[in-house]
Image 1 (cartoon, rainbow, N blue to C red):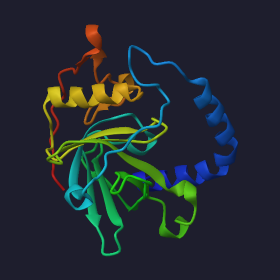
Image 2: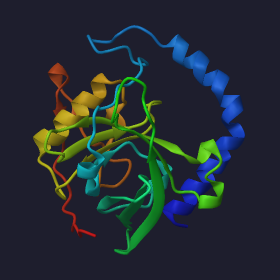
Image 3: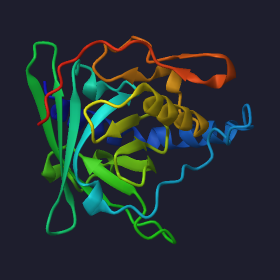
Length: 230
């Protein structure tokens, strides 16, 4: 089963339970409160980068780390995402990952910008990998929020407002440990559970890093991975 099929099944299932989960999530969010160690409120609304030049953002990005998710459960090697802006302003999204047997799995989806009042060009998008005929269902569209982006458009931190999904992306197939650590520490201040993050290309279940004194991030020696640029 491809990551695209899994994503579609998950989205349809999510639509059927959306109403039931809404009240529970609201109550849970209201119950959260109080900053920890000087960090922002854990459930304070996330802010996205604005403005984002989506033409510059287009192209190939390489995943460096992520919070585990069911769609990438079988991805054991390099993962990449290729964004292509289309004539109508939407984007083709092509995700590609290496499986344990050395083959590649690919999912092709669509993305569109979500306007944010008072923030022209805000880095807030919706992405779907479900079939086009299901695009009328709100639940098949997932959030894609650009939370951090360097001036040269070389490293990006992407997540979802519920903080269940997180990715560190880069133009280069691999970034240095200091850069990755800085991205994850920033994600921690936003309320993401970075202790569960795994380094792309490493077995899911292995720790991405271990916190040390001073809440600094230390990444372990990474496993050698053959990287293929799509």
